[in-house]
Image (cartoon, rainbow, N blue to C red; front, side, top):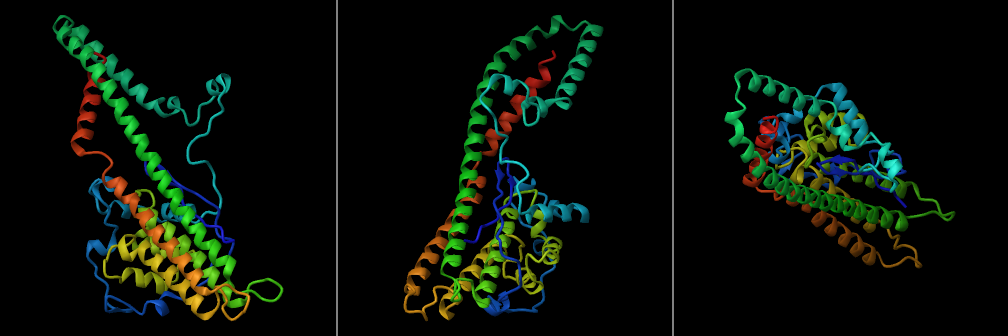
Length: 359
């Protein structure tokens, strides 16, 4: 069995961590042999130097419209980000866990709403209230603010209801993306299980040298797929899909220099998205698996007792098709999470309520 690694993704929603592959990451069959050219572009072709080639083209919902946001990271931060992406251990769960006990819950601090709002938000609101109270008392404005108090009382109920609905929708989105991410992880585990089960073995049951190298390369591509997938739909991991980030991944043996150049010279010109990022890496995994089936490293057809390789090929194809349709749903969910008009209205209502609360 080849365990699969995924990254924890904080999308407002956190996306995940899982055990890493047990195989040592090695170069193996390089992508240049599998893909000598992309859309007529040979390896070594001149790369575009426009902004779309040097930064990730994420939607405004991720980076606020600032296409250079992922470039503002120093070397130390990039190194720590790379360490987190390639980590084989999980420091904390996706969400803070709880024990259903009154005394236990009252003793908690980390991960609670109190920890989230103290002291910054509470201190700010307190200072604002004191400032307004001083101004109202100095200029004797109390009688003139009675109308404001009535408006505040009416709007408080409306804002509370609106926020409750907004929170329920936000949590539903969180659960949906979390579920999709887990299904992506499951399909990758399926591919790893099939490859590890049907890889060519020696008489003593151990893998042959060729099969071991094939599995190591597939495992490395699976991890690279995870990194580029979540770099395409999150803010925190987006720097890994830039030229600097890809170079750092080369230093950590997550991909080779030739594979980096192929990603950088692909037809889309946008690191981490489309065929240039995780979609291209999925194509590498697919081509490598089917190449292994054809030459006997997977589903060794040279042995009379082995199952027909067509069954393994169909199984791998179905898992990869399902994987592609599953991970594409992440961007669909994020693109349609909430209309701008409704979100802006909620923000205005909340800000006005907080602003006039001291009054």
